[in-house]
Image (cartoon, rainbow, N blue to C red):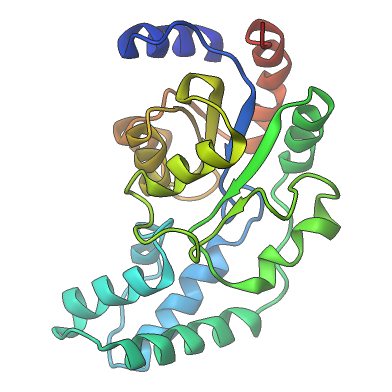
Length: 244
């Protein structure tokens, strides 16, 4: 159970207790079923520089900022270091490829999760490595009131993206809480590693080809087979760890 996992996490960290005051929530693959389209857009982008990789490769880089992903892919598979102008152009192409695909759907269970957090008074902070406006601009219509405009960390807000702890440290600061007062909600190993490095308990949720074991290996406090399964676990979590 998530409650038992968090108790073990608190003991291992030497924290005084756990209070669920803030939820620090990833976007792609967590709130939206967008990763298959992102992966295909990355694949098409790399084809423009003569690199053809299986689409599964791109799921492994989920959570990085766009510029960091391009730099890594180009160095590893094209054998050269792109300059800033090329990075901007390649990211423009990737964004265009993504925008040309059918609109992505909300992840099943995500609205239920956010509704429970809102009703319980838990602060919500968006923490995404993305800088693309196509999904960020949909948040208010798809999840009304879930994320205040000043409670969003994107690729534009930190110098180092996931798996560095910086995005989740910034989210803790925005929420005004300590690590033992927050829960990270993630679906990718790099994001899980980022949250764990920030000292926060992490719910790792499988929503694509990445298995639960990979999320556990990256440092997830507890893992779930779907967003719907995580949403179903929230009532107990909200009851057991309500702020004192």
